[in-house]
Length: 200
Image (cartoon, one colour):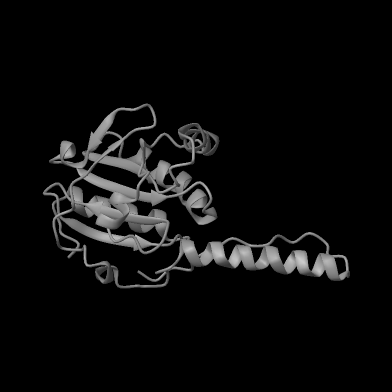
């Protein structure tokens, strides 16, 4: 999928011409670019089969919600599942989440389940993850992949990463990165999967 990807910027505040400020701005720019590189390690890849997941059964897993309940992927058999791998520190992820919430609202009466899989470190409190979602107005159930087990199962190459799993448990598409076409594309794919039309 070809999309114009976004990434963190260093801001556009007026700059004072002093060595310290120039170094500070450069450091912030490098940090922003590093964040973008992490978020989009595989961004720009228009072939989602590069992950090796598409067309194969989605790896089953069990994670806890932020309030301690266990959720297992296979519990949602006969539903289309949208997995969103994200982190509180990833700016593109925070841009994408409200978009996914709009899509979730559109399909709330359909056989579609959204799960927001946080890849934040084990040191990140669940209150921070939940607070971030609340601030964004996102009501997608959140899971915390504390040890990165699920991320490895899904060969996470960058974030945000969306994985669409059909009602038979087959991975139908993988999208890495966020762009203005996300909402339209995910909506189109969900419409197709609910109509039992494969994306493969």
